[in-house]
Length: 437
Image (cartoon, rainbow, N blue to C red; front, side):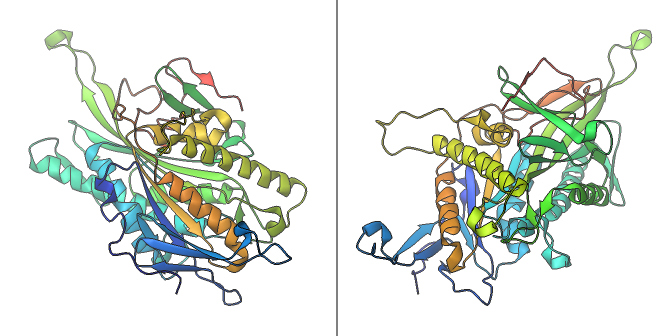
């Protein structure tokens, strides 16, 4: 036994604490042919064992065998189910995003082959549905409850026709979905069939602190089935390649977002001077779910040529994210000056800037492989997650955007936005500065 269960599970009430990022660790099942080096105790502790080095360096302290124990908000063992992971990592955030008009960002991190894509997208069986599918279902369920509560309190009257949302003229909710990937520092729209091959540009309005993705399709969906259709269409367009470490390795970061707006008709003037009703859109929430490409070691993946270069780009963007998280960590040594997070070092960190610096809700799921040959990757992932758990949320404005006349398809999300906050299909809004990496 590597460790004892802590007296109290860590972070059961993490959502109610002042922590900005809820951090969970998920251990994938151990293949039968491998020896395990990871053990889980309770719901908040994990230990990893490092074997002693051989070849004459055993006398060095750094090369001696050791057991490292860490605690997190939540730890899921190899027997954990998709339902359990969703109930802790996503469901509270989605509910809070809908009821409190906030943004939420959930992302999975880990080395290739650690189970990130399975966690986010799931498998073929109904019980293996991933976080994205379950989050879509939860969004429409929460909107239905909110509509019923508004109708019961004498606010906007709402009715549900089947699984479609249909509100009266006082106001209605509109859900839009977008799906993009970042491959070799190029942003591709996975829902765009025509129009420039789906290439997008990441733009930033530094004065307002907004990040936007131009030329990004936002498809309006009326129910869960339509949202899942968009998800499946984007999955077919994703960049996937086999490596020695994973038969279906994601070669790009994928971001699936749901944007919820409230649309009302506004009539100006009265009598003969009244004008035609205009639509006023208010951004209520943006929920982004991110499947990060796995960090790679060339010796494990055995890549060469273009695949090796792709792996280097993936590691480069993940390093930029690690540097941003490190800069945001609470430092125990106050004499050390806090460096500025290098958000502009990659497209990924620029798009995550709003999530990491606002009062939006953020959850991170660190996936680790328990096999002995994966020690370095798993240990690095756990250290990555530990640093992320110390990030604190600076006080900034709440997510809010009101756009008259149908919105014009421009502008970014507010301070609580997720990745690509406020991204729309159009390009309007104020002049933006294009990020050049």
